Length: 607
Ligand code: M6R
Image (cartoon, rainbow, N blue to C red; front, side):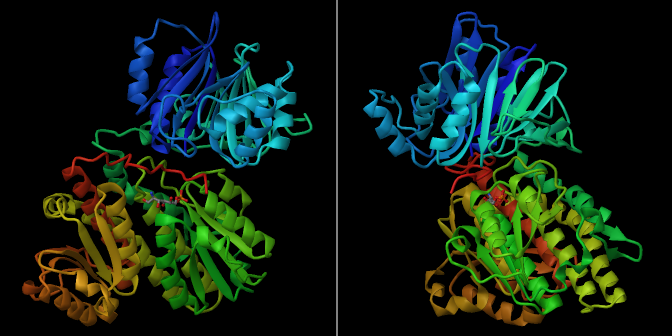
């Protein structure tokens, strides 16, 4: 949540900051602002609305030439959306931007009020600016280190001190910051997408460390003032991956990038004989040996990937698996010990609840393994083991390619664990792996449903409620189909286990209610068809999705997607593509902001 950027160097800061904010906008987009050093001190321009509104305001401002500044795009937590509440916030000599939440801001506000200091905004961030200014006596490092003692919560700050022109001070505790120094200067941001134009090499600012950016270098200090050299990381994608590349929206581009994302995630992990090999990821194959219980914990779409993982793990390993919503899990006093494997799944690797769930698992001595897309992110760094999805940057708020890449990692783990545990022979495992490899061309074919999905979704655009129904893997996938549609089309939908409908919810199905029915699993196929008949008899408009071109009574559906045939276990991959396309086009037909839906942000770094 919230995007942060800071630059000092030889380039025009205005361009670096505005372009950076445009690339970070998916992290929060209710207001934006910049602050920069000019000959006569620090200037701030901020506004509600998108970065495009900020750009207009900046272009209209009296000409400035600055080579050092900070920028912020906001997702409001404390205080409504207003110009005053937008960042940067200035108090005294301090101007700062912030990503995170200062949990004890109210106590701090009371203490500062006793000193006669009052904020003008309703934000927790301004209180942080006031506190740092209060502690500042000419030594920024000292003030920031002191501030750590008072501040509770998560924060990443970029701070300008009025009497230190050309220098940016950054402090991190919980919220991400990545940085690089290049030929033209030093740059820091919440996310690598804002840095990629300048460098493929970067480092993650470690927790509770301070980075001091000047045009010539970045120096990183630990809490004892010791200079440290953070590990350099490298991204294997380039600027084009973070641009729309001719697509009208990032979401559509990312849907179409799935074959490539899956190729990059799966192929390097296949060894001779078509067997899974996770040794390149540093995963000892013995990791599963003493495990008698698996807990998968994550949020949103990543949690839905876990629901599919559960089915696969239980089927192949015969070990009990539970899937826990991370925000619930962290407060439930869950049962774990050193024979438990806790798998956390996260695209961003920074989701606050998932990170807290991981930390909780570690306190119980459970083994921890994460499936993460963003290299060097907090969840990746803090897990015992990490399996990266190589999906490339995912910019649209709605997760698509990250989801299928997460599924592929879960399948790789399931096959590799099953082999290690002797639950499958090498021959059987190799056959499963063949199935996994077949999903790549199958997804390519499923993408040709683009036109049909566009057409069919015209029938969804005006509805108020709809249902996704399925059984087994199809039910797990229905949950994902439902959230995808909800978040970008604002249409209410529910995912239902098809057999459960008649225990209450069927009363909501009336003439014309759209029902998206997934019937890809042969073991429950006939049961599913009966459930479809039940909704059909109540007048439902049925969109049927089957695995292959099965013969099906055409009176039970209005529209039919016959997916390229795969063995049942792999059907969620192709069916997911169709659900993504339906959600995407429904949002487009409704004229909504597909990539940046209301009230949401890509990376949920607050609780
Ligand atoms: O970065 P993460 O994968 O941890 O994010 C988890 C959820 O916030 C995320 O999947 C969210 O549900 C998506 N917007 C759904 O498309």
